[in-house]
Image 1 (cartoon, rainbow, N blue to C red):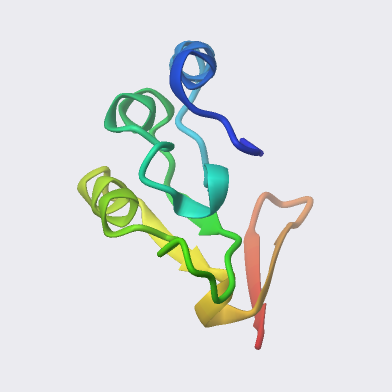
Image 2: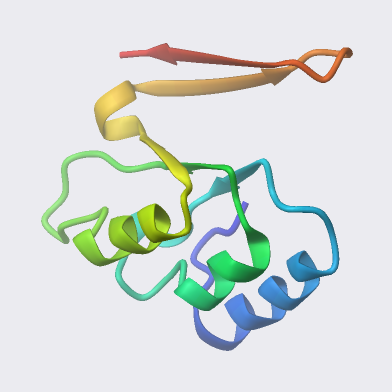
Length: 102
């Protein structure tokens, strides 16, 4: 969960992520603003899926730039703006179950 992570702090977290396996799920920072979720961070974290928590807003979130970086990283993106409440459950077997409630 990245909160409003940007800049040097994002770099630090990316460096830590690069030490481990690729991320299964990334909760995208700052509602998908253009100032977060850099290409460098994505190359270090290598998320398979990303969730952007966002609703109607005057800021243009998620921004086309953030979405393009996620697509370039081959990350599947879900937004609460389109899917509503997003629930991911990981079963004991390791199977992932996604639920969407608009």
